Amino acid sequence: MSPTTRVGVVDTGVNPWHSHVRGPVAGCRIFADGRGRIREDGEFFDPVGHGTAVAGVLRRELPLAEIYAVRVFGEGLTTYPSLVARGILRAAAEGCSVINLSLAVPPGPGAGLIADACAEVRRAGCLVVAAGDPGGRPVLPAALPGVIGVLADEALADGEVRVAGEGPCPFRAPGRPRDLAGLPREQNLLGCSFACARVAARAAQDREWAEKALDRAGRSEYKSRLTGD
Image 1: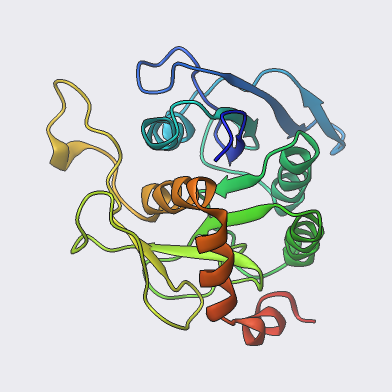
Image 2: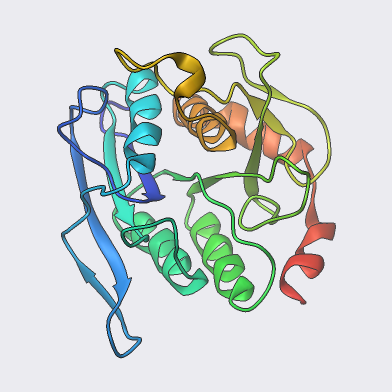
């Protein structure tokens, strides 16, 4: 991994001053204005905390990497496929070699936008890593061809990553974020979002491993089910 590796975090934003995140951080916000037009500005700061927790996992594993935050959520955990798709493209345009999406969008209107964005950035050489659905339902972008889909597996040791075989999300990692002082672990966040960040970090550290593992996990049969193509 190059010291100048840049990792995209398409999420709720990132707090660059958080003790778990401090280091090189830049970013943008992508949002719909009052007339439904997609806009961008520099307000990528995180009002929710989810994206910051994800970035904290990445920073622990990638202390020298640049984190590029793309905020696609408003004040709550609500976004639109068009914003997610634009966020993926923006992260790639900003030079991110790995794009982390600790989010899941169900199949439906706008699914094609996300699929097209993922395909475009893959052709440009980016690795896309996305959180799957713990219930096993195919979701976007995790179950799309060419995307590294991840589920949490608490049976794995901290730092362990494995490929479990075929399926919409064959990659596995522990689903815990970094511990917070004064907060019992069982009260902290938990799930596929943080397993996704662990796998994204591994992909940034060892791209050859990621590409080979992705090649072994063929999932083209899921695309028509997700996008209607």
